[in-house]
Image (cartoon, rainbow over all chains, first blue to last red; front, side, top):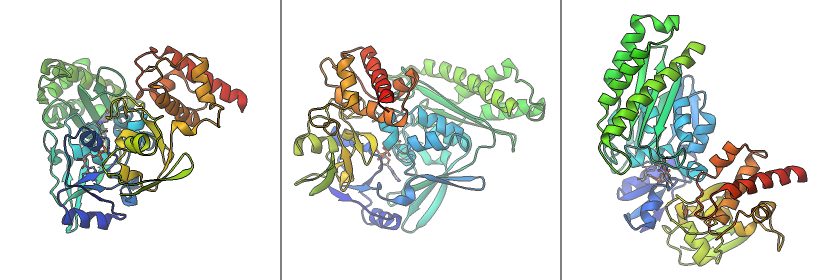
Length: 288
Length: 157
Ligand SMILES: Cc1cc2nc3c(=O)[nH]c(=O)nc-3n(C[C@H](O)[C@H](O)[C@H](O)COP(=O)(O)OP(=O)(O)OC[C@H]3O[C@@H](n4cnc5c(N)ncnc54)[C@H](O)[C@@H]3O)c2cc1C
Ligand code: FES
Ligand code: FES
């Protein structure tokens, strides 16, 4: 097995072109588990840990650029105002040790339906920037996930960054698991209110072959808010509206029975999480 | 590869290292530092916790090649000769050590917590230790040890 350790982004892209069989290695919190258990031994590892361009995040007006190497620890500490949904999700990942190493790019690279970064990025309308030596392209995040642990990366491409608009309204993230730490989600839900466009964004985790968006629930909620002019009056949302929103979120999921939970439990839990998340986010909006 | 890193302040080298083996394996099997424990090799138990360039990580999830040139501090580096580090002393005094297998990782996680938050709430303690499993103590004595270490450090300031 070869170990490639480029020092710059252009060297990394060149290495991936020359060695499309090389597996990228960021925080290693997924890759090392496979290596330690001899589940998968790639022909080469491509360590991205020394590439400064990938670390951290930046803001240009209202556009955020999250480097693929952004760790959960940094996301949780620094994105509380600009992307609160992702900051909340990051806080729920693993343990301090895992959050110190695990990255957003690694979460997207693994493309697990349960990845906690995915729902808030879906709700916020993110794009993934993929790059190769030949150039780069932007993929809307909903088109990035192709199946369980499969994504839109071509063999010569690497994830460069996630591009996402800065939050203009409240965001929420909620996750069900057996304890408050160190759990893979049984199911999860993220919500983003976009008052500037009078839009509502959703993201569902761990309840389908890929992370999902609840289109019908978004439309329903936008319609209900517009109909009663709630964006401007900031009046309370009807309990029945929140419940219906939850039902439509659950209806958008395609859960299965597995060791972590049954499909029926996941659907029920999602409807509860979504109704609550809408309640919390709307309460934040009314206060804002 | 030949691996070079600084472990507990000393430059160290190891020959014949496979870049894909874990830093935990390097520490235990190649550098003779068995303080960091191997209980799961999948990031779940925290017993292999060390500082990598000053950041608390699970050594089992760091590839040896990633540690080239790095600065590593292990539990062996905390004591000053025969004098235990105050966090270690608190674990002994509080009766937080039974079989002791989880202890090195918990000591490191506690050390990391207290350098970030000198007077942590119980919630902060639980959150900081969430990635460290103990099969013996039931955690109450461990919480006592962390509170004691925090209080002693504040007295010492
Ligand atoms: C104990 C434990 C607890 C965990 N808890 C959670 C949790 O609560 N929630 C959660 O979502 N996940 C969790 N995980 C999984 C893991 O931490 C996350 O998926 C994390 O985001 C992976 O990031 P990484 O940097 O460690 O990725 P790595 O392991 O380095 O890589 C993961 C995958 O992404 C690819 N990759 C990495 N970077 C790039 C790039 N720039 N371009 C292209 N491909 C790339 C790699 O080739 C690999 O396929 C947990 C893992 C452990 C061990
Ligand atoms: S051995 Fe590393 S976390 Fe368990
Ligand atoms: S003292 Fe035995 S595992 Fe913690």
